[in-house]
Length: 212
View 1 (tube, helix red, strand yellow):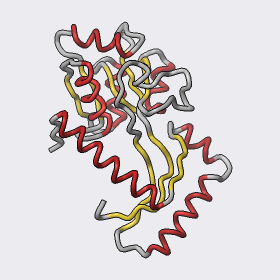
View 2 (view 1 turned 90 degrees about the horizontal axis):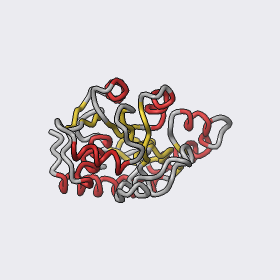
View 3 (view 1 turned 60 degrees about the vertical axis):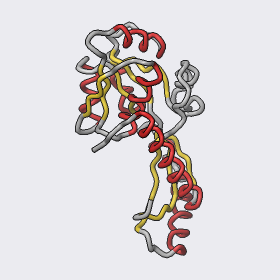
C-alpha cells in the first residue's frame, strides 16, 4: 500500500471450492460432514502460506468446526495436480485451474466465493448459498505504479486501461482465464486495496494464521 500507487483494477479473480471426486460429496455441507469424521484429517492445498486459497481453506475449516491439514505447494499448478490425483482432498482455486480436471471427472466443483453467483458458473452456488457465509472477498488483478508517479500520468494510464478492456476479444480472453472484467479507476481501486487489506488481516488474526 505504501510502495505502490493504484492505477486501475482490471478484473475480479474469485475462487471456487474443488474437491477430489473420490469423496462422495455433492455439496459443501456433505464435504464438511466427511471432514468431521475423517481419520486422519482431510487435507487442503494452496499455492503457499498466506495466499487467498490458504486463507479460504482455513476459513472453511473454522466455519465447519473441523480440523483440516493445510498443504502448501510451490504454485497453484502443483496444488491442482495433487488435488486431481488425490494427494490432497480439496482446494480453493480459480475456475480455469479447476475446469480441465472437473471435465475429466477427477475434481468436483462445489461452490464459489463472492457475494453472488459468477457469470462463469451460473449453476454453481456461492459459499453462502451452500450454507457458509463470509466468503465474499474476491481476488483481483490491476495495474499499479511506484509511489511518487505523477497523478497526471496515473490518470492517463487509467483511461488507457479502461479503453483497452473494452477492445475486441478482451472479455473473452479474460473469461477463458477464469476472470471477470471489472474496471475501477485509481481512486476506487485504491479503496478496494485498503479494504481488502483490512479484511484479510482481520481474518488472519481471527484464525491465528501465521504466514512466516
